Length: 511
Image (cartoon, rainbow, N blue to C red):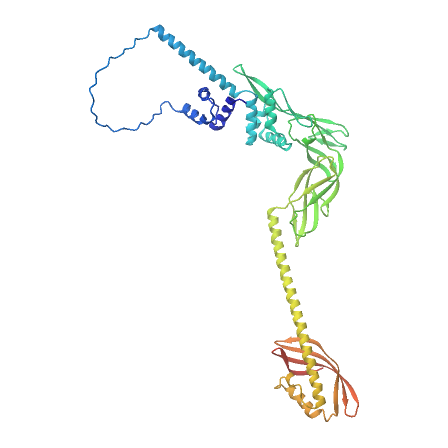
């Protein structure tokens, strides 16, 4: 693209319209200076009636000098012939200027390079209406959506549209872009001549011929019956993915579905839509950030196909399947979003990544937090229970030590006939008085020599307010002064009152 064409294209981008012949000539005079585009557009657009304000200058008194008058030179009037001669020369100059401007102007708005630039500009800003207009011809009209699908396919195939169109433009539309599979995709053709001189071009796209083949009986495509194991033509379409309504039978029952052409399978502008029945394994997955869920069910085309996320099915190539799953979390059943996917021929497995809606995600998050709070509470209760049990066990150990020391003092008291257990009792209690009386007044008359402990075990400890109820298994041998002895066994219930880090006995009963 030469400098004048670049100037014309840039003028259109900046000003929003094509340059007029006058503006083009002004540009030529500036050697197509890109920086003067706005200036040139402003000069030409200026209204002829626009008045320029002149700063008013105050009157200043001056002394007018006396000057000697100079002789006045008078022009000799032109003859009519001279006037016509001058007019003719001026008209010729204007005509030449007009022709030059017109030539450059027409050259700037025609040609394959101009078309290439228009197309690339439209692609760069995703102007699919303009792209559709550039692709359309008298015999083939493109819609905005079709243009978008076509451009998206080119982009997905990593085709450098600008590079390929530049190459076609340099060949004056004689070359065609073919992809690696031999498909013709883009070209240009001359559509006429502006003013009978300047060639104009339009974009050319190439159709794709679509056929269908199946190994099933009773298959129809858009109402057209497809005979088993035969290739049947479905006609020509634009080079964009086409969707067809298909009926037949598969593992999912009577099939009414859509099947789409996969353009990556096209070769030499031909493609066969495979509708064969084959084994496919569906492998679905739930979002990785979901908590542990249960009772998962996989549904395809409205039919439950598995308890879990995978299942092998007999499906039709290019069949459209709608897949979702249900699962249970904390007693509530949730449903994923549906995934619509085409069965790709020659691939033995179908990977489907399931998602959940933001509403369900929020509900699960709330249920998760409630579960975590419940578990935390249960853990805290368990911890508290463990600590209480630990404290109770320690309390029982402390009481066992206390009671063991007490009974030792009681045995010593029996042998010595003197009270040695006062520190273990509430000395104001009735039971203390009873035990004191036993040592001082009953042991000797009963001829008791001493007592030997055989078992003295705390079997149970409960609380009664701030006091403790302690059950003790008391088994001992009582030896008399005459050498004889008896084994005594009884269960006693002691009531203890806390006393600092120890206790005081204030009641004893037996059973």
